Image (tube, rainbow, N blue to C red; front, side):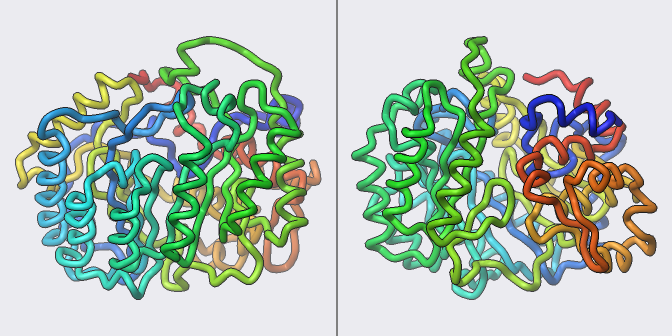
Length: 439
């Protein structure tokens, strides 16, 4: 574990801590684990169903997601057929189960045809018996694939949240990161989403792009705000290995912290509240969250190549890659997998008690609401500052405050979230990540 005081002297942008442990800490398990045995020990009344569609119309220069572009021949159809096989097998393994959240991500799920989208939605409703109209549900889209027929289908099937990756409304900025995108196409897609009338629109934007300025950043935010999105996610640009930008090995002036602060100020003065370093939500929005689901303790069931599943003691998935040939190889392996093999987990990360504590703290502390001390005490039967004494460094550096009920990051702590999240990784996870050979 590095000293936090030393780390804060460097860049706050170390790694995006959106889950723990990172997938590069996953390894081949010593033996296959039957999912029926694994899930039998779990609470299954508040599960999250995630469906992964690893297809996009283009590969952005910053993207390290598990996705491939423009699949040929029957690749898409074969993938959906295997996804159906996996869903049917998994449903048998986890019965009885109740799902209280649904997300369809990728990739770009709306890359699929309307027929393909219908097939994916039917997995949720027919195989897992989910009434989509009664739970929070979300799907990712892109400006080019947010067509009228697909959006109307999603609205008809009661999808409540549309998240669209815009990244920037300035054409030159997105072109600088290998994204062929016309602003007119973006505006048409947003108009269409608003006209059809989804309860929640989220717009993703990126700051720190090459040649981006405070003025151009403010312009992108102003255009985004004209659509009154219920949510906005502001992502710092990361240049990751094996991505288009990573292969270029170029450098430019790092303005991310200035752009973050400017963007936050613009949103706060326009009626938004900050939920985390990245997420901003319009005040008085009917939040699409479920009181029955808690990301720290409740499970996630992931379907598809690239999807992860979370139980209390094991996170499992298939192997991970960024390079296109390796991604396709993994998807092909997934498609050719015998149906009965989906009844087992063979690749992942086992969470002992210490890792469960690290995950609980990271999943809680990086939110504005902070870490609920009583919740932690009830779950682990001990005080968090006794279990993870390193947290005291946050207080010493005024990156967090401590009350009777919560440990919360300060304003300075929130903007250091990516650094703090990474700093809270266990030594074991950091070792595994360092040893991992990215493909």
